Amino acid sequence: MPLTVSPSSLVDHSTPCYYYDIALLDATLKEVRKHGLDKGYHVHFALKANHEPYLLKKIRQAGLGADCVSGGEVQQALDNDFKPDQIAFAGVGKSDQEINLGLESSIFCFNVESLQELSVINEIAKKKQTKAPVALRLNPNIPVKTHKYIATGLNENKFGINDEELILVLEALPNLSCIEFLGIHFHIGSQINHLEPFIELAQKTNKYVEQIEAAGFTIKVLNMGGGYGINYIEPDAEPIPNFKAFFNVFDTHLNRRSDQEIHFELGRSIIAQSGSLISRVLFIKERSKKTFAIIDAGMTELIRPALYQATHQIERIDSHENTSNTYQNYDVVGPICESSDSFAQNYLLPVLQRGDLLAIRSAGAYGQVMKSNYNLRPDFPVIYSDKISDQP
Ligand SMILES: *Cc1c(COP(=O)(O)O)cnc(C)c1O
Image (cartoon, rainbow, N blue to C red; front, side):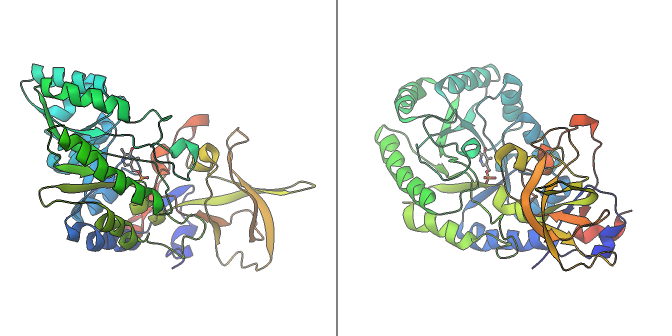
């Protein structure tokens, strides 16, 4: 299933722009429903990956809740009609203002990352004469093969409560009268493409449940977080991640009781493959050892390659002007005044000429949300495949 956009619909469109394949998003959500929601799992969409209102509406209508990591995201979820009791709020540095917003909005759960945060939330809830629903974000020390900037479940990472601190938290909890203890939460990293870390997570969760319940608490909520990866190398070979295999891990390895709810917080796996960044070739620059294709999109539109050495498939959208079938290697670079502003090195593409359109694939997650106006770059348009006729 190559990019389902007819070149003619984009040829005259201003670039750079983001393009979202809504049919693919719908098909992806259907798989999440079939293998996740229909089994009774609760799935929250991580707004951090994408917070476009039109996409959020589709996601909410499919029955997913919201996972937020800032007050701004909690507000965005509320403004886009997610029910407060479907909103989870994580984050290692919640401000008092953000905690207040969560309490006033009666969100489902705060995922709490330290003993100090727990006592601050308790104090704020006490002032408001309310109770804060809380899950403890535990750091299970599970290594994952992903870029070090997006591994979060190791002792050396800033996230979560480690095993030593957990003992102190369990001692403190009975005295924190405005905390309603719901359960435990994890998020071990992102772009995790193999199942072993999730198997280990499920097994460790069983041990944590035993430990915490032996200390006299009841765990009602088990939140396994997100992190399931996607195929950036060959998006058309795997446009929809294998959700059956992912949820099966938890069917198989998690000791689930009927009085417990299992939650997930998926971001990338839901939205990444539906988005492409569309850009036009501005100039071709020949150098003795390489050829640069300088395009009109840069790290200001998609920072993942510059930030995490991420790889995105790039393809030429064929037009009448250029039907060349000979190939050449290019360094595909943006216009921003930084050498890290590069999408690919030595990348094989049909011979390019000024004006050709390129699609940078798998850009739906952590793409548009990380835009910046560095170099005073202007904002860009967004196109939805099912509304394409509405576009200028
Ligand atoms: C980023 C994040 C997610 C989503 O991660 P993906 O890799 O996009 O699935 C889920 N939960 C928390 C707490 C996060 O910070």
